[in-house]
Amino acid sequence: MRIAYFTHSLASCWNHGNAHFLRGVLRDLMARGHAVTAYEPENAWSLANLLRDHGEAGLDAYRAAYPELASTRYADVDAVVERAADSDLVLVHEWNEPALVAALGVARRRGARYTLLFHDTHHRAVSAPEEMGRFDLSGYDGVLAFGETLAAVYRATGWGRRVFVWHESADTRLFRPPAREGARAGLIWIGNWGDDERSAELETYLFRPAAQVGLPLDIYGVRYPAAALATLERYGARYHGWAPNAVAPGLFARRLATVHVPRRFYVERLPGIPTIRVFEALACGIPLVCAPWDDAEGLFRPGLDYLVARTGAEMESHLRALRSDHGHRQALATAGLATIRARHTCAHRAEELLSIAASLRAPATLEATA
Image (cartoon, rainbow, N blue to C red; front, side):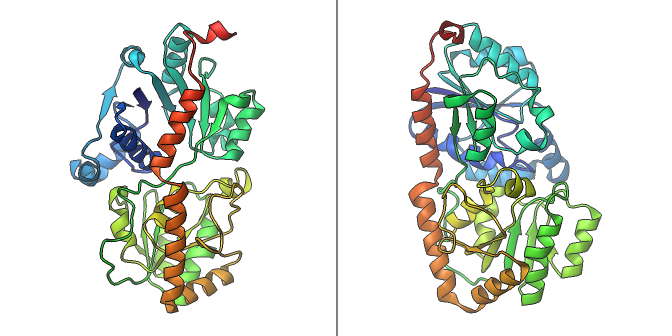
């Protein structure tokens, strides 16, 4: 099958979590013998920020981890839409420009024979519906939503059976336990500060408990304003800035545990959707403790695959137990890893995508079914 994916960026994961999942899925599809092409716009903001901060060296880890991947950059929308016309399956991520999204839909309605899917991996459908309203999806065969609560938003607007839940997952070719276990110490948190939508939660469930328990805390991520950096300094956390996602397994391998603090929209408006870091951390065999989060879809086994802290005090209790009990840490790591390997690898998601595409075998034009 000839598959085209339109992404914001394949090369850069600077504040661009979709790149993590996309790399793993595309690599798995290629390993299955499919012809895969990734398209990304010239001057993508994620790549521009990465190059500004780190230069070409910022791409070294990605290139080393994914030598088989590359992307085609484009400036002209009409030209790239025409170039993708011979594809069998086209996926369009929601961080693309409305003009591209619309142009692919127009081509589909006019006779392009590919199956066209819109891929939504963000909370904008509920946090910024006016932005999502700029997308013309009338020419699309279906929507891929990265959680059931997001899929329900699309169903409510008329997509019905043409919206599919397609969760993120871990690329287990890269995210795996270390080949040889070494010394571990302290906590690690990999995440971006963002727009203050979880600053209070981070203080309650990460910074303060780590300081109270006396566990050194290392922080990696971007978009930390001066006030956030001051908070980290106050709690004694060490801030390292951006780290390429491809080096995260090595970072996890040196720490006792990590913590999941979901963004507020995924607690209040889109429950049941974890960050991709949950999949990746468990795949690396590192014990995980979560701030309050409702695993509404039963993706994991709370209490077995990871611990849940309902209060800051409970987080402190969990961290103390993990610090002192090797057996406890090992049991959590083993259980979480088993769940990832059984249900949540990029190989699983590639198979799901192919099944979805098969169920939507498109007629010559969408208008033929109207």
